[in-house]
Image (cartoon, rainbow, N blue to C red):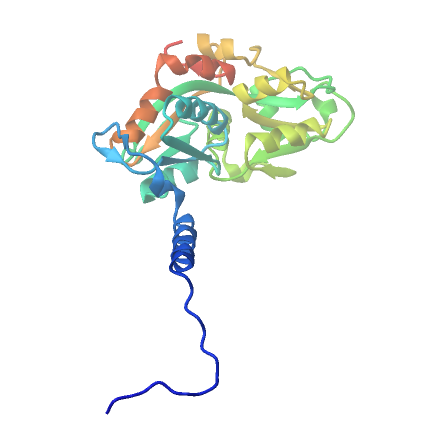
Length: 302
């Protein structure tokens, strides 16, 4: 059967001009392309391990709050050298750094102590040396303590600053949270367990310790020497107490006279390769020494 056109009086739509239809399709195509991820439009770049990568490489580094400011500075300098690399630095403590590296949640972990027995499943890469300082408010008249006095303060045997030659005021004891390497170093040096400490305030990273002490004239805490020296240079109202007759300083860490020192590390699950190896090598190189010193740490071999 031959179908004929209807003679209905309903007007028919005129077809759009060919040029207009093409313009409509082109506009739709451009819109769709603009929704695609921009990384796919980047030109290929060389990977240190060989071959090419189509997108910017992102390294994730997590862990110690002591090491993080240094690694952040190193990351910025590294990114300037390598336009196609980005380094994301996150804190959370040394325990997080080791755990994330083991579980593949981070490419690199940051740990502010040396390895202990049973931790040889990780690869340890030292990047700097540091010490641990006892700090108080800048207005506190106490300028020096012995290890025995520090131990008694943290055990709760000395509760007033008057007991160590200071004001007649209760001591606010600031302690580090579990999982922080700074806590482990502190406990190891003074020879007691975490449960022995009578703390009024428990903090996580160094900056929390700095903030607590700078805002409380009667507080005492312990933090990285590098962090404390940097903060005093910036005018933060804290001071580092002489311990057992030795002034805590980068210089005392360098010459080995300060009693509480440690090595700062990066850790990886396996022997680093590719971009991970390139970044680790850069952090350990002499080129990084000015940045290490800029954070008031002691460069390796220096």
